[in-house]
Image (cartoon, rainbow, N blue to C red; front, side):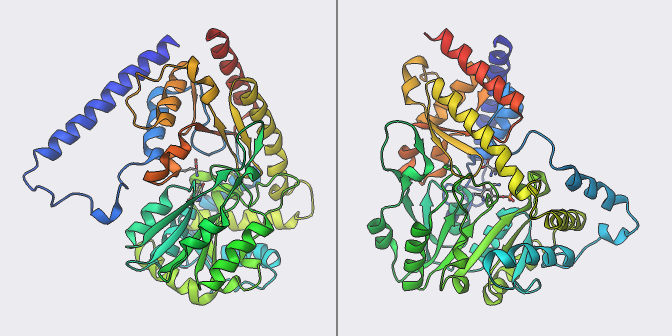
Length: 453
Ligand code: PMP
Ligand code: GLN
């Protein structure tokens, strides 16, 4: 713990001195405002990922439950095929491939999704392979949002949506999910939208609504009824729906993932986003995709062909083979599309229980791999006065990491400025981690609580 404190202190001082010297350099710059970040990006210069990944690198927490990625190996068939592709007979698999998606991958994406959306997806015109789901979101937003267009965003939201909308000159309109009740053990279904508030956000300037189900960070899996309400409004006001479904395979019984594109009247106005990183537990591979009707897809293609052009060929080939392998055992309980959720259910339950036993009030997620937990019952056990951050959840997550060695993410990062207070009582824990690391987390939480009695 002493070593941790020492490293933390040293790293914090060096981080602060870099920031200070950057500020000095900027303020002494004779060019004035000429080279500042364009104002349309708003507050986009700050990123919770950049900050907390740097914290993890500097302070080396005993358990990192911050950024969402597995700390154990992906399925063997997935990584083996990538290794084989790089040195295999077909050396062209190391060269550029088709810009809008490697043929073998788009064919397989069509095979995976066509039965799920009850229509034959045209692999060449209705699917775009992107540099992670991030770029699918970026191309969808930049390909549709014009200056002054309004985009409805449900809070908490994956933080890049805000930046991307503003980059396009659009105006985000936020609506927060709110808990129906605050007492006792909760599930993510407790977090709901106020229908009247949602209705009031639709105007003649509304171009798009961004949906994220299963949801990051809450783990909410939107119900058929909730999706129908959203769909009815999108249809009534002629609005596009950008549906971020990267956690589509991580849905826990008895919940079911419903693709909003399958609701009557929604296919024509929905762009659905997926991620190989999430599907196959390879977040570092950064391959994603979007599927939608060809006329919408063309707008994404224009953005993609001019800023990315084509994604990494061997990785696309490996993702294609991984899909083929899983399609070959689609009805088996070993298929990764079902085994992953089974494996994660036990981890979710273990982490929820240990959080509850150690003073947190967790929201048990119906999907995804995060738990948002209220830490306010612990507030008398932790002195946050030494933490200079503006928001209480930033102060808490940093101080808690220093005292316990467990790193988490502050959820106020997932709210717009006026609503940040809604995230301040919480910390986000990621549970796609080795059982031994979850067990270490439990030990550290218990020891910390015992010391604070
Ligand atoms: N959407 C959500 C909701 C996410 O949590 C993430 C993070 N992985 C992404 C999109 C981006 O996914 P990718 O790593 O495939 O770019
Ligand atoms: N989606 C992951 C998370 O929410 C990673 C985000 C990122 O690193 N930008 O933790």
